[in-house]
Structure formats: C-alpha cells, structure tokens
Length: 322
Image 1 (cartoon, rainbow, N blue to C red):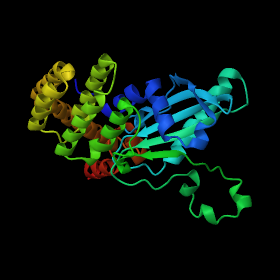
Image 2 (cartoon, rainbow, N blue to C red):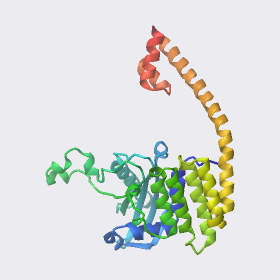
Image 3 (cartoon, rainbow, N blue to C red):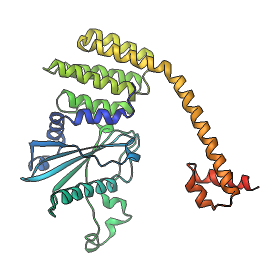
Image 4 (cartoon, rainbow, N blue to C red):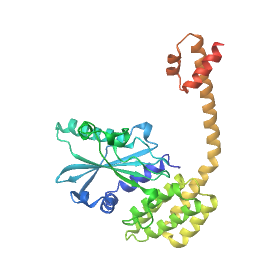
C-alpha cells in the first residue's frame, strides 16, 4: 500500500498531465522563453534518463514542443531529497547529451534540438550552484578566450521551499502540487494538516468533480506516504474535516486511512523479518571475507567479492589473519 517513492509518483502523476504542465510553463517560465514556445504543441515523451542508483533522489519528465518554430524539448528534473546536490548542473548536462544522442541515433541527423532544462527542488537547505561553470573553481577569473573552450550553461531553478503562498500560482491542481511539495519537508504535522485543508479548498474550484476526487486520492496517498510527521490524531482530524468540507472525497479518505492503519499493524513484523534477513546476509559476507583472507587473496580481490564497506573488510581481514 505504502508508495515506495511517493515523491516520484506525485511528480509524474501531476506534472505528467499535459494540462498541468502547460499551466506550469505559462505561470513560471520567463516571458522571453515563453515567446518562442508554442505550448499547444506540448507532447509528453516516454523517455527517462535517471539511472537506478539515483531514482530514490531524482525524477524526470521530457516534453517535446515547438521552440522557435523548430522541434525542441523541455526537460524537467525533480530533486526530492531534503538537501540539494552540488553536481546537478553536471547531471543535467549528461542527460541533455543523452537526449541529443538519442535524437542523432534515431533520425540520423546532426542538427541538435533546443533543450530547456528546468529543475524543481523542495528541500530545506538553500540552493547555490545554478550554472555548470560554478562547479569549476575560479572559472569566472579565466580569460574569456579560455572560457570559450569550456562548456557552461544555466538552468531554470524552482526552489519551492522559498515560495510564499502568493507566489504559488496556476490552476487548482498545480497550486496543490506546488504547495504540498513545499510543505512536505518544511511544515510540522499541524502545518501539514493546514496545507491539506487548503488543498481541499483548491479542489472545490474544479468544475470536473470526478477529476477533483481522483486527484484528492493522489494527494492523500502522497501525504500519507511522504509526510513523516503526521500522527494518528492528525489523520483522525483530517478524516472528520473532510467529511464535512469535502464529502465527495470522504469515502476515499477513509479507505486510504484504513489501508495505512492495516499496513502499520504489519510493519513491525515485516521490519523484524527484514532485520533478520539482513543479519543473516551480513554474517555470510563476513564468513566469506574470512575464508578468502585465509586463502591468500589480495585485499582488492576480497573487497570486490563482497558487499561490505572497504574499512570493514580490512578490519575483518586483519582479525582473520591474526
């Protein structure tokens, strides 16, 4: 029941909706950029460029659109960690190169499309690096003739943790999306409950009530999965309030809450089982290290053969030899 990566799911279910994506672009892209984009041509692409190791920290969405009357792309990278990555400009460059490479390989062309990179972040720590050149020490001190040899670019940054309520614009779904992303890390349980009630007020603005109820379910699943500070009394308060202020979503609210409660009953047992498996696997790894050390294998060979930290392997090897 509990979503494995709730930030990723919430991001893709919301901003993956073309109407919401258009709403975001219309409200948050600089006017000079919007002047050359035909948002009516916006078309989501299935491609993702995040490798498995980074999927717990990042999500991405790629859209094709007419940019400056030619085929171009808008690439959204969403960082859902509570601290910013210092190498985000480098990561973005790699993903953009992959997009260009796919274009060249598929169409056998060497004309590169425009790619506009956008980064969405909602962590608590401030964001500093906004250009690739900032990753290169004293880049700004280099002569311009030398800078010309070094790739540099900027990206559009949306640090949601710094947004006020007034700065969050757009239609109901977009405002809910941005508000909840902003508040999931920065608010305590009471603040988060208030944000949920505000989101419900936004939902009531939707003319299509069925869409509103469906998105309400998306919202609640996200908050219950990612909102670490919510208590049992908070959830009960939300259920009671929803019954009177948003009866359309009351049934879904109760169903979701019950599912999470049932999961909570089983969670202790599951954690115990997982812990037992971890201990058993660790013991096997230690035994393997000891056997390989006694066989005379080098430290590098032993480290490559097991899934334990290098320092721990070195300690076990020393103890085994002694």
